Length: 636
Image (tube, rainbow, N blue to C red; front, top):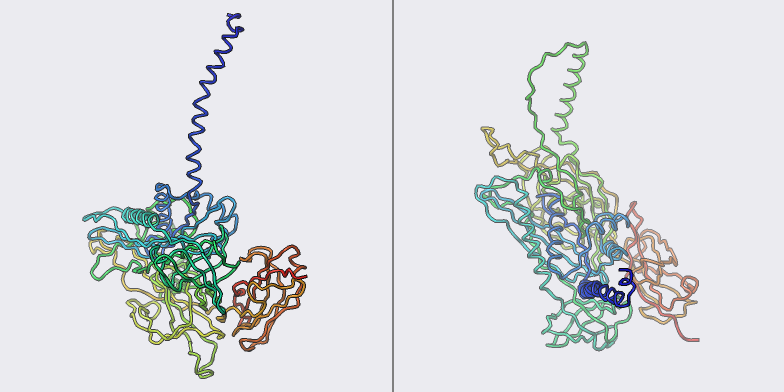
């Protein structure tokens, strides 16, 4: 045996056997690589919890919708979906708070642990459950945002219903889950089929102040007049353009935002426009039998924790308040007499009287923490005021029908006949437990669906407020909010016989007292920019930045950065304070400034001006202009 082990033939045989044993391993490793390469080519997306815009199901229904869509997207092998736990860890690490705006979403997607190219958000815009026959119906809206451009690149609005079940007596959560799962499947199908028009810039022309780009796509590729495009160079946003003329295979788009100089061979991609959304908000049709969802969270297991949806504010996750049932089922017991029994009886009587008094005035049902801040949408040049508030603890999110917003103007009557007078009129409302409202300038409009009545009374009257005006720039406003809600009633209350087979009649609607007034706020728009012009070549050692004041603003800040998004390396060049009442167009300037002091190695710098109004107290942060770009002059 010793000679056999030491022989050359035995050693050669051993090597051959070892090689044969390792060969499948090498083949297996080679077979795995194509699959890895295939996954790497899929777009990385993160999916956040849906906002529930209805009073049905609460936040858990939004989580269920997001979880269902994640499962469908993973099964389709068209997206590389980020794990929910990774998303939640990034949200906690970045200390992000709801509601998220597009900057928050971009920060979240750009986190090193995520590095997503797209963010998927959504909302449940309609949900209802009927009893005869038992069936649930939902409508969801899904939006897909591109991280690089922060614009929508895909989306879907779909409706689905569970199977009709005559005589069904089980939980309503089963019906809702079935409808949500079907809607998620339809949404994934729509996302997978849709493709935005994409093309290339062939040439650019400048005529006066107009900057046009010739695109290599036209009507045959789905381009339409008015369609908006983002212009990309690699993954960097270069500008935005809007189509003015369309031919079969070419089109011309006017450059509306020119961040880095649009030029030939830049890539263009259309901006997705979400279809119109019909917001039924779960209101039942006349004659339709309702099913009251009083304990959805208690009977429905919570899905895995996801991120929280954007767009517009969603109710915070919480357990619904249980129905209050007073029932004496304990057997009678012999009680000992006590010397303090009389005092306890008096104290109990006083407590009962106090509770009755509170119930009579519906105390504690008022909304609170109402805040207001100026709002400006760059894409639509829209001025506005964003109003936010907190829901009363005494009212469950499921029982909120709508919030009504009242506006108060600081302008005394007849001080300026051109400015509409507002002293507590209802100027808008939002359905369900949505705690945000955007007030904007607009011509007088009639507002339908407003409820009127006294707190504590039932069967409110639905009325129309005529000729509701919009807000006026430069005027101080304050806001109050009142809530219209359903009183808490259990599912089993409705049969005179007490058998628990009733439909849960909710009785009439009730309305709370208006909240305390919010802080004062003035709607303003960003200031104007004069010089230097965009893409101007300047001497970095001697630059003067000039702008113009906007109506209602008192404080201005001039900033510069090497980052077009102003997320890093931001320098404040000047802070300017104007006296109240300074007219729009007043000069706001800083200089001469030596940019080499702030950016010694930069050849390109972006600058902007922000405005804020300090009249009437706290009014939020600065509203900034779109950035302009200056280039270091090469002249000696």
